[in-house]
Image (cartoon, rainbow, N blue to C red; front, side):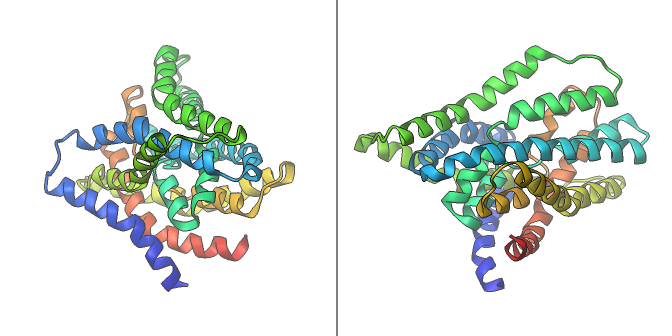
Length: 316
């Protein structure tokens, strides 16, 4: 089993290690990670999503509904458990908000896509696209709702939420819609356009992983370690239980094939999302703590993902 998993993990670790090394050697500007992330999300990802759904088997398209339902349910379970633990163990507002933010937002659509593509191939990537297609609307609506309740505030900036949804979700969603329409319509692309799509799509997964490594910061305060450890256990270990509950509940009401089941379980144990600090702009939070959870959970996930991969292959 180890000999089978090792090449898969190297596909993940090497681009991330290169990104981390680039950060340590200051090969890119300070805002390099953010600029590259924007480039990947708004330029490369739409091509990758389009190419994948354009060439996807038609019989896989109905899996959109159980995958999307699983994402919404998993997000709600993470929000509920994150808010409960934050209120139970932390008295300070900054630390409580930071814990919730770090636990609530998983790296489903960025690192998760890279993991699914590397571990299970293009068909699993299709399911992971279905799973995280409504990433921004779900995270913004649920995240603001729970944080407002936790901070005893009545309203947020709906205009800001709308802008964030449009800016971050429009391009990938457009690529998904066009890909499905072209697939179902039996369309073919002219050779130059097909080469353009393939070129940008091919660089997406390596750039996603490189950007994850580039965005890691290893400078953490000693006093944060207990909270970081709790958040890591919540996301990387307890998250599997949440994923299993979601998988079984969704499968009770909707047809979930084996590959979608694997994607749900593996996505459930993704580390904290790199864009989690977004919420710290709107709520009083410890930004360094959130950054620490991102770094530690991402690094530890290179081990936990191997373990969960073995478990998933055994139970699905």
